Amino acid sequence: MSRDDRPIRDTIAIEEVTVSNMWEIAAIVEVLERKDLCTKQDLYDIITEFRCKNLRAKIPETAFLEPIPPHRD
Image (cartoon, rainbow, N blue to C red; front, side, top):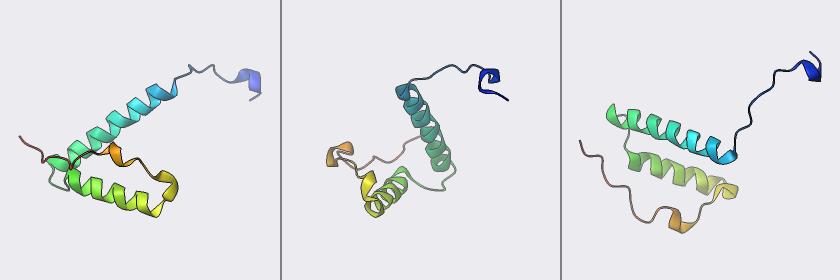
């Protein structure tokens, strides 16, 4: 397939992709929590651990101002 034969794709803004990924991750977290497989705090702790191991992934201290409150039904 030559370069000219490739189908034309719509372009998408990085912000749109970022928001889409955010909603997909939020849905996965919600499913895990509803099935009592983990809590949001468990996930926060794992993310913090991963970020400590990967210094390039550091986030500002202000990203999470307080612990995540427990899920209420």
